[in-house]
Image (cartoon, rainbow, N blue to C red; front, side):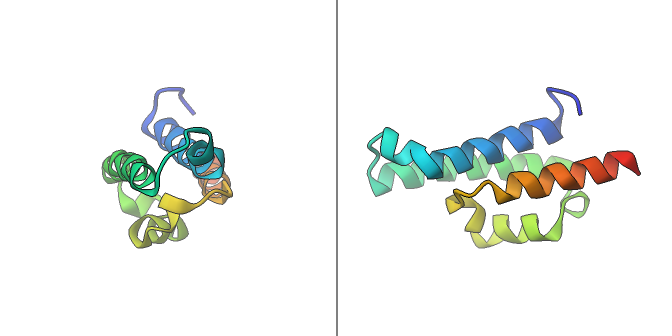
Length: 93
């Protein structure tokens, strides 16, 4: 996968959101309002990339997490793993 591709940007953004949720809120000593603002900005950028890639090209579990808001607060990194696996399979096909 290319370093500056839309897929790579999406992965970096999902990873940065998970890291922010895991440690960044505490490290930044952010209030809940500040955390919500950071998450909203990241989700807006993420939705823009998803739109460019096309929802149909992404795993339904990921799309559902974006739409439900679950991705915005996820700190596990599971969606990074899901996307990486999906992109590897689609590249190999």
